[in-house]
Length: 340
Image 1 (spheres, rainbow, N blue to C red):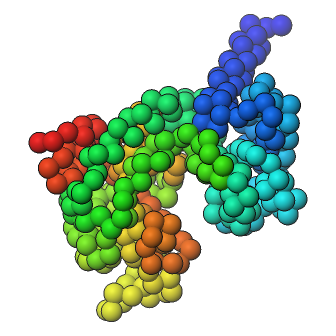
Image 2: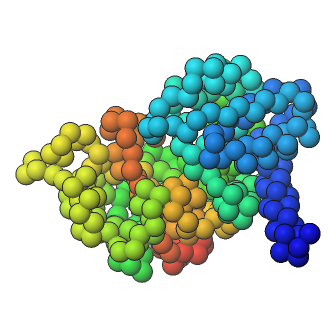
């Protein structure tokens, strides 16, 4: 055996071992799978290696594990094959590692209603699985995020700035969500992995200013900045990308010209808390990068809003400063969470 072949085999074995470390963390820490529980792992042909690693880790805990591989989804939002959907609601735990998300499908919703706890990892690849946000210490993340709960009480006015020029203000329209910490141990609970963010619904019509996206947009790294002008909670102008500008195109009545209408609504604001996450061009990973912020547009019904269009898009701003009345939540991308 040549030295080159030997080194390649060692490298492949190291990758397998590293993937297994992450899989064990998901199985034992995030999901707290027990030896009597039925577990279903759903994967596709593009993520099959991650699926097999999750299967091996789950098999160390329980012998009631099934791995199922399906074709990649031909269209985002498509339902999985009916046998997969049926199995999803008949087990205790579902781990989903697929190219496209199943989070918003009827199959996932019905499984959650049946009390199944679910972790979804859409778009996951081996590099992210080995060294990205998934490798976080989720127990520590849970403690840190939970400890910030008192900061958010009775404080509603938010101001965000960034070195790239973001300067926008809004008032919160609901409570801050502090449950995206990667721990999914209750019946019916669902989480996306990697996790680690804090987010909120902006009050309708309250956001004004400019957002300069300099990180990523819809999971694609940005070469040039994109500038959004926000007036009374709506996108009124987009500069820097003609395709995105056309997507948000408004007529003189501030209505999107080609249907969708409420896509211009600022639906969600959040910031990352995961110190292991990196800006890599993946929607889930990018939004949890510690000290970065994201803004979502479109459907806000999941947080109690009334923009019900079934579509949401988002972008990431790097190294933000976030001010919550008399609290500095973050300064230039460093989480502070202290009174001035």
